[in-house]
Length: 297
Image (cartoon, rainbow, N blue to C red):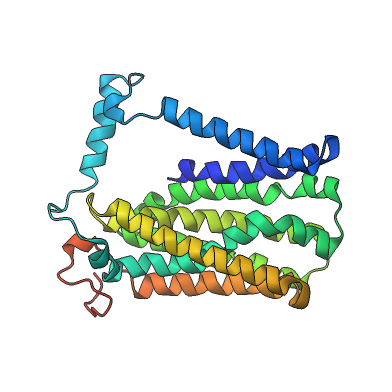
């Protein structure tokens, strides 16, 4: 999941210099044309090259058996009966993931959409300076994706916890690191601000990967796609709403309070994941509804 999640960060890392190059060398319209062409090329590549492992001719039989066997092995719970979306929405495990994702995703939306404007408004960066620096937080976001994926097994080994608890620890680590960009208003140097944004990129993508992966840890094979889709909807709803808030308030109260709010959101998300999400898969819980007060394992 960490390596998969790198894709969005790489795109965001390439975008600032690419867009500035298009504007400087041609026009702002060219930036949209390049983005559209790249999107179309990606879609065509997906249709041509993506195949289910059982249909992928470029795999050896050994690789195919390894992949399919691994997919089956990670869902050992008895999960013959599929829960409906409404039943998933009523589970405590769902809200233990959906609420932290709702609280965390505005940070990624802000990093993706508002860093160039932040650099221009607060520090007076021109287009070339934005191209030089706006990609850096996304590079650290890439590192966060990968490191965040390797940490859970290390935490399991070091602290003797189970898989779900190890994911919670990654989320908590990321939330604590988000305090860095939350303090961005305390400094006047643009280079310190960029450093704090780099910490924020690393923090968010490390915790984001853990949150996304938790759906497959706590839900069985028949619910994981629906559960992950619903938690993703919660995440992007929050990102959309916060984008509207940033657009409305950035000129009146400034960016610094908004970055502080993002840090608070992530800390609240870490609190929710420890208090709401139980440390067992949903299928192992006798009654994991939102009102369930069963003791966590």
